Length: 372
Ligand code: HEM
Image (cartoon, rainbow, N blue to C red; front, top):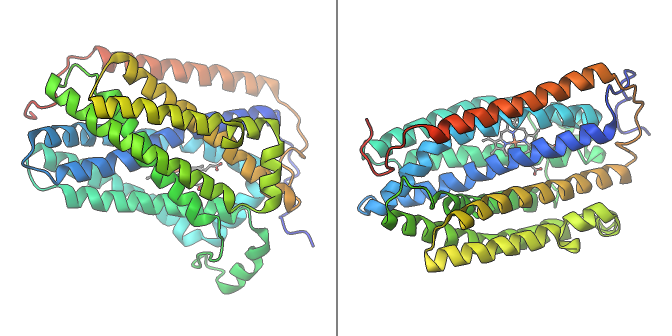
């Protein structure tokens, strides 16, 4: 019996390798922003509990002020991979999205509430008011969005349960149960949040808007959190890998690209370990420097790229084992549209670079200065 809906008769307008490349690049950037949000927010919440400590307060404020901006990146960098995923995996992804439709649509409302709470969190910190509970609610909501995304991204790989789910609820009100890969996969992203959030603090610690005392504190906290949760992240990665079906594990270990990207071929695992070492140096020696700062940023991006490539392998191999070959599509490339897209893509990156340079050149105020 055919488990996947029939393929769309309209051919793909661009080569599959190009769609996959763009999908992975944009999704890796989405993951960098997501991890900064999940980890940075929890660190800020914990620091905001120590209202008596000026250093904790300044660091929590510095994070909270940036989190509203990070959220814009989470959302805007989430849209392109969503479009590419729908093009490449629509028959699976649309089906799973419809099956959990109520929760899937609810993400929009949860996101708006989270966004508003992030502003409230930052404003309350600026005003010196108790803010931890506002930040905590925002974090719980963001974590629930992550859980729903993990739910959908794993449900799309399980055509064998779709029919029963639809029988149980055709309204999309029924969440799937019994998938051993779901919770490890979600917790892997949550652990990655504290790891990347810590690296983010190591990156921030070299900013001249912090006093030398604050720089040492920020590097110390960020480095220790990243070093500890880098190890947790590694363990969660092994766990998420170990619960995959045997055919998928064998395929991941045999495929040269996935072998290189994942810990079996040392890509992701080595990068996380290097980042843990760097973070431990920054954290325990309380050092902040431009070199450490930029290295932390580079490592965070590389870790997420290798992670995304490996995760893509999990999906493709799982779907292949159920009869869905992502490479098996009719392609009729419309080169003029592809060319126009690439020109606009590069122009868009240029505009973002210009925006970043404007922000970098803007007059700086010290992080600890009272808000205007
Ligand atoms: C609070 C906001 C958000 C959080 C915490 C979040 C978190 C996550 C997580 C944890 C995953 C990985 C799930 C897994 O594979 O286990 C994910 C994937 C994804 N997210 Fe987000 N996300 C957020 C917002 C968004 C938004 C607003 C969009 C789109 C408009 C988006 C688009 C995507 C897409 C398309 C994927 C998976 C793509 C793929 O596998 O091909 N996300 N997100």
